[in-house]
Length: 257
Image (cartoon, rainbow, N blue to C red; front, side):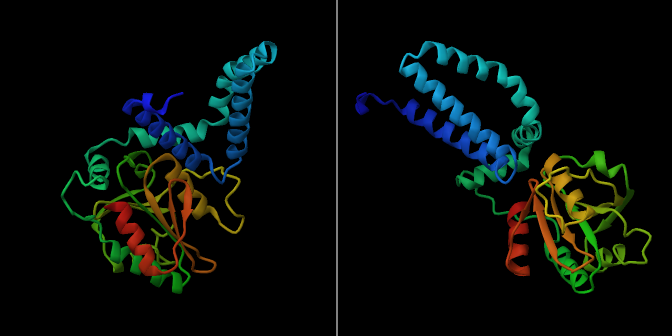
């Protein structure tokens, strides 16, 4: 093949395939599905090799396996496919603006309207007091399907209110708090619990609920452990690591911008 014959569209094609593979890898990494994904890639590579070598019998067997196996893959990767389609479906104005800003095609530097500082400071104080808490912050996807399970609220986000809601003797401390824009819109919310077996056993129901809602939506969650006061930041079905409270606040600001 003459490299001079490569068209611009070919470069774009390779680039888009690389992006697609990157996102697929991010969806399955850290799960059992990554081993299945690697196995499929190996089988596909062997199939292409048998075609090049004109090994017709083995090529037909592997080709038939890959063709019929697509139905099985839908079942095996059901959760990952859901997350991928959810990511593609988040196409409202806010998400488009974030993409355009990455390519410097949108000049606005508008930050999040949510009082991130108040939320982080409340979590820090509750962590020191070992007060359990679960806060779900909306980004693009609607949270109405879980909001209906709790008590409707409409209060501006501030540190004292957050702490009073999760105070151990408060009737509102069970369940999750929903934050939309800069308003607390619901408390005592029941969230879907994740069945991900890779979640460490030291994490309890609050953490599994945070992972569960972040698997089904693009919301981000803050969890304060009642046992050790540790703060966890959950997004896209995974625990996002941070080294300090300041770094947690920066990460949250970046994700909500």
